[in-house]
Image (cartoon, rainbow, N blue to C red; front, side, top):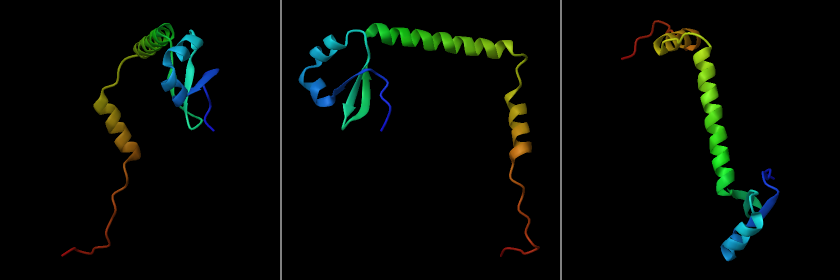
Amino acid sequence: MEQLLATRSVSITELKRSPSAVLEQAGSEPVAVLNHNRPAAYLLSPEVYESMLNRLNADLRAAIQDGIDSGPAIAAEDVFSELTARYAEPAIKTCGKRSS
């Protein structure tokens, strides 16, 4: 069974029947929407969703800055050349047979 990432849950049928009641009962807490007892979606308040986006944006900016601070950039062609040299499949040698 999949892990629920919310303390509240509701079936899709219940959500269809009374979406405003589900939202009102949830308040600012996330709600797992279940389809056949498996999470199909999550409902979030606008404040929680905005907070998540802000956090992701801050984490992304920090990761980019860490990359910038880690040292000089390496040209992509140098990286690909090194990867090719390390991981290229060896050429298959034929035993002197010619194809016709």
